[in-house]
Length: 226
Image (cartoon, rainbow, N blue to C red):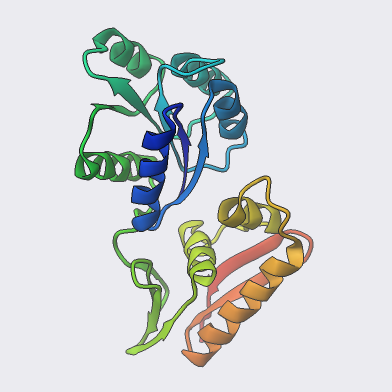
């Protein structure tokens, strides 16, 4: 899951980044409203943590703009204690939730999980299942019929993306944006390498799951029927 943090308090943003990465989320951070809007409009994020009081553009304006443009990414507002009117305004304009500063790590993580569940995403605290394979994102293990393999991080992130896409075709551009970020200089052959790694591991496990290529379109995870 990829999360965008829009927060002008640098130390808080850094702390949030470390917390989320520790819990296996991919994180991007910006410190002003205009950059926050530009990043959020890319549509690559699964959730936004959005401060209300920001330089250049406030969080409520960002939220209104996103919803007006049809961007439905879940938004959790970060508010100062006592900003009741801002909370109400944010919820009225389409925020999914809010947390008041200072907040506990446990509360924030619980609200993130709840927002992702409402969106219909698979929250990465449990194992993901597809066909006869099971991906444990916490320890990067892939299991199938009693056998298991250890994946490297990018392999796990790529397989998680394909599994949560629920048999939808995923382009190389979408993979790069999700795994490395939309401003990354990673090239298509990097994706091909990791796809090849995963295919070999699925073959080793004798999994009834394969990664199929739709030439010129992308990749799709499919169950193999006997």
